[in-house]
Length: 131
Image 1 (cartoon, rainbow, N blue to C red):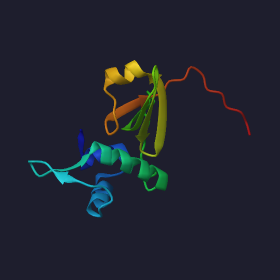
Image 2: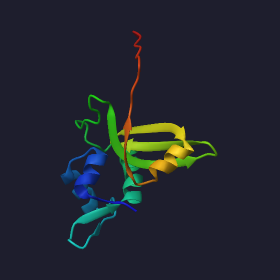
Image 3: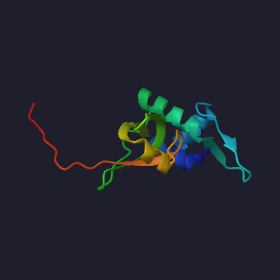
Image 4: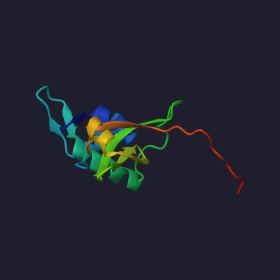
């Protein structure tokens, strides 16, 4: 299972490293130390915590999650496999993205809960109506 440093976790959660460190110090997310003394968070623990943070709205509002290429870096929070299709959920800061793709693609990518992943969104046209 992949583990994340406090800084990596902070980027995935859309908060500052200081905020992530305070949350860890308060026991909101479990950490352990590696052989060099760095604090790490297990991927599954971070995935569950990222959903909790997004639902409670405790992230930092000024963080940016998109770039010119509409990339949403985050952490895989759920993988549901069917016979042919699959559904993958990614929590990117306060944004929850759900992608439907083939089971084969999920298996080839080795996607599982707790892994870092980037959802890329592309649209050929966007329509806006006046309310």
